[in-house]
Image (cartoon, rainbow, N blue to C red):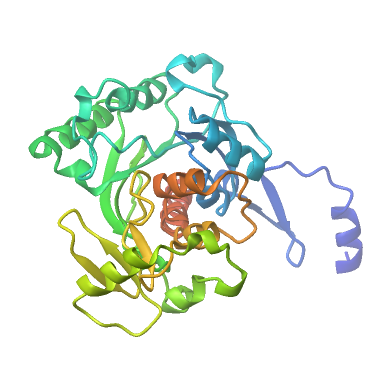
Length: 347
């Protein structure tokens, strides 16, 4: 049979969705089930974690976010209004999925927050909603994100409790603190990432992004001539920052004022915070970052729409994730799941 006639016959075949054919050699090769997969986006915020897992082929089949302003931003960018309070949603009402994703509320565990942990009346127990859904649905994998201080809260007892509960569900659990600075954005943001797999998956966390993917502060700042003048601070605030800044850096830089009143400049931002004062971080001691700059500091694409006032987007970016970190973790998770699948198929 000639190659041309073989190709003609192949075009008439009713291919099974999990099979692709190498036209040159007529050899069927199985497409991994992890080439595309379903995930749910809990405590979704404005969708930073969703972006990371869509990047590797994932399809979101359910999302939940109780904050109305965050849900407004989410809907504007994903054409989907997330469901509300997860405590009021039955597991049976959540469609089937392969991976559970959740950046569960971090205020109860953060250094800046109230540190009440599991005793927090409205947020600390939300981890157990994740546990409930994992127990009822048993997806193949999950990824959770939280503040670094979760590992130290209550002398480590809180974190050990979380890991124990996840392992008792049958998951192999991996965790590591990752810094957004290592993954291409000019923001020092350390977060604990917890990944789990039902199967004996050989998983390793990513180390960093290639150097050519790193963006500098100059890369993310907007043209100041086009910015709203309301971003500029009053002269007394600017002068106070300059007087307390002990180190002189070449522009551009970002300063932040810590709880002790010290002002430190860096060629990157400290971690964006949801509840910080309006003047928490300043560009060159002169102005607040624009909404687009805050989104860029978190690695969001410039196509991401801003549909809420400044105070709301500031809170939302402070509560969100560094998207390049999530992308890198998602890539390693899917790589590990594909490798495990291949090993089982070839036993």
